[in-house]
Length: 419
Image 1 (tube, rainbow, N blue to C red):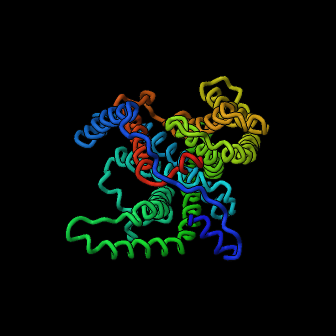
Image 2: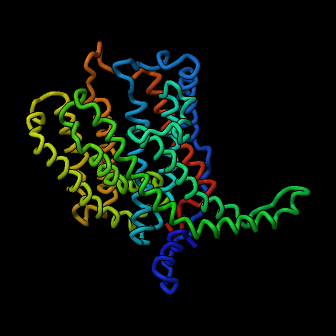
Image 3: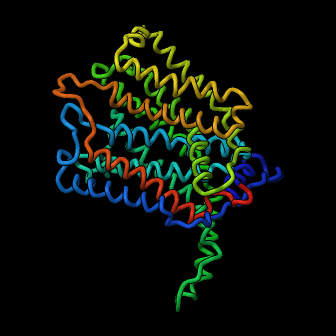
């Protein structure tokens, strides 16, 4: 029985009929395809630059300076990666908290995407940190600082990543239960191991709702805290992006990109694996997106009005054009495309709209951390080095590769005949 069914029955009474849940299964496709081999090559290149960074320091691989202490490793690997992993907590809230079991089929892929996204965010952060070996400090209560926004980001990411791995445990147990076959003399422990696995599965079934709620709360906290970091840099940011409500805008944009990211990932995976697209799930899911985008756009435009910042939109600078592209293509266009039911049922239109939202939120994070950021005494503008680009692309390739490996090993996607 799925976790959503367990939670639903406890909240609404065991007498309620359990919703049908398509059985998930490992993907039978061959793993080492030519595309996967290309991913491995890209990962090897990125790893070589990462090793050079750890051996020779940041200056040997990056263009980072005292004026530009962060670059694409923060803007793309961390800030964008965290935002695009929002599908995990938005779908968990939709299914497990609001009891929309119709969408349960997309929860496991969204959970896996979030788990891998946050894992690689941490890996990217380790490469970027000057003293990466001190990354464990937020876990020590004596080093906590209740006045630090960065501390809130760090501790929430650590806790949420732990929650994600706990939420993934039922999939692991489902895969290995009933298949324990220890070699040689250890075979006598097969029954004991199976009993322990069954006990762990039952225990998780009873308490998993706690981690679901905790995951949603932690996500809301650190998604907004990422915006709070840049509120401190008012004198170093362009007025089109700096605002005292930046934490709220970061949270709203993360919620807005959650379902489009689920649609984007699902349609890409279906195409790559030769599976039938889950359009009967994705099209109804897309009805929610224009509402969230409208709320985000209303706060965005209302903030410009209250701060009298509309003049910067029409000033003709690079920042003003980038801002118009971000809002026009990343918010307004997909909001229009997804308002008609006929367009939502069209795979090309649905995929285009989801891709635009994903690209728009990614662009927003890059704009906030790089395009809008202008240090007071910079000698030259920042542009990422070959090493920075190689590590970032290598991390993205690693995420895609691990997604491919895990859907092959564990029951993440529904059986192909039920997809």
